[in-house]
Length: 363
Image 1 (tube, helix red, strand yellow):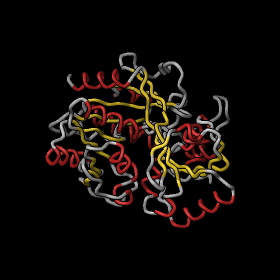
Image 2: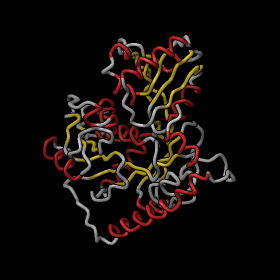
Image 3: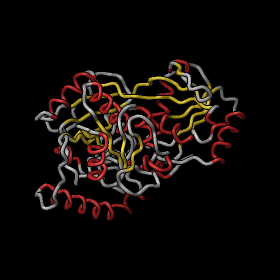
């Protein structure tokens, strides 16, 4: 299933620097120029304090990127929030709640003890964060200032972690963590919609920490030309953590996939990364379906997937944790699937990353 995002991805991330420009992108260039002018003007207004930022009563950490698409913001948010909690902080996570039907701010997805809203209400990523970061409140809404004040007053949060918020400049942040895909940090170098850039690479000057994310497990990624030398750079690779069996929630090791014939499906921003991870685990992928990012499955979808998997004699039906939270409502289907949980492994290590982050909070 080749959706619009997949097609755009092939245009935005061409094979090699000499790949021809697709005609579609040429028609989009005027819109990119207009978009870039608006973004540049807005940034200047904030840089010159003409547009004022709101400063809350506790430190704020933003996790974001400069491109559209998946660079690991959600697992980085989980890692950061859990790490701060382990160091004695009382973090709360703030998310916009993209894809959820609630449009107000201050929606409590989790109070730290229970998950109170569904993916349809709050969005899939906030519910995933609440599941992966137990004991940490999660609040959604487009106005992070309102959500932040609620988290401080209601839950006693002493540090706020903002998911996907580099461009949300209205709320002052003490630390900006910016993620870059180490293999394709800027895509074709063009702004939306002719390219994947939400803003120009000059935005990296607002970063306090840069994390290059990727699949490979090699040596430290080299610094990209546009990364200022004064900014600490870490590297993180996606690491399969465990497999969850839907019929009994039993935790299984990732190497269970070795040699298995899989029917895989997902609705995430970078489905190719899920595909690569399954291959690296030694799986035999007999069919792979890529739905649009944040896709909410319908009864017809799960029936078709289950039917195709049976016809192809797949040994396992597998998807991602982000998809899994949206499939719980289809219990008959959920009991047939396996969910691959993936995290980020920091390089040089998570301890050094968190120490750097905590020292920046003390400035």
